Length: 218
Length: 174
Image (tube, rainbow over all chains, first blue to last red; front, side, top):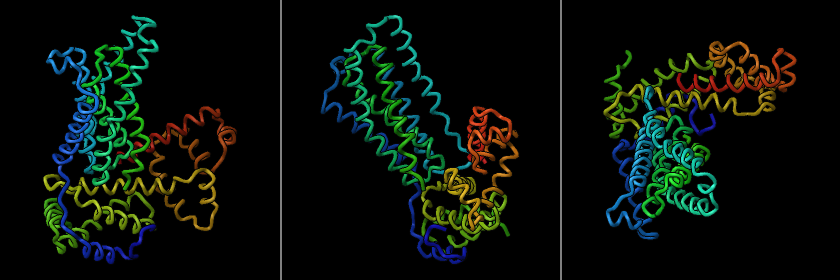
């Protein structure tokens, strides 16, 4: 064995018993509380640093904004809950609920592609790309807090599917990040939201899938 | 006498509260359960190491058991994770290292892994098993394997990819 353990299993058990300290079981509610607190801090940071879009402050919500932010919030919540559940090992657990939220959120880029193709080149102009890159950058930056909270939680736990946990950490962080930044972004255009806001989730998911497993293996 | 699920859950709850006597009894029962679990999956020479590694993991992750849930599914998930990790460690080496292992003085890890793999290979199509055996175990290049078994080079690559993917899924669901 690579670790410093006695050769006899009996001796190991004696050593483990000797080192026993009382522990508090990981609670799902605590994990969710930390994730939501991270989301709250992220939204507050967006509001303080960049301000909230005027129509939201005035209470005149754009339907596309409402639908898109709602979908990102749901995707973030379902993924974050799944990550938190995954921190406690259990044979036979089903961690597939987030897939439905992801399928619903995937309607945004699908709709953006359909509308964008219909509009032609103007939908993909340099100016539109510049605004889009701003959202991609800022949304990804605001994903960091949720990312850190979930990785910290997974390190406390014992995830038995590190790759999937990493992917979902990225999905949750990206969804929360772009959800928060949507309160500042003034564009309610489906092409902008469907392509660039969704890209935040995709990029974050890729980073999570690649980087997180190494951080949470136990 | 084998402890039943409610008894194990009760011992675990007491262990989480810091009861050393209950913890000693629990670890003793876990050791028996783990020996039985791993006994069907790894070579006898690997058994002690894997049982000890899993007991250590259990000790470090005590807080991840939820007192409201059953104990054995939790223990089984930890055991499966350690087993997969054990197999990964043996097979993490690239082709060259694997060949060195097979040719080296200490062949025990490769033989042990081989015993585990035989059981999994039985569930794969023959073409995929052959491709994995030739390239990943015997260390042939893709073109050499192609000549040896009559599959085209691209088919060898596809069969290795699909076979390894199925093996991974089987291990994770086991």
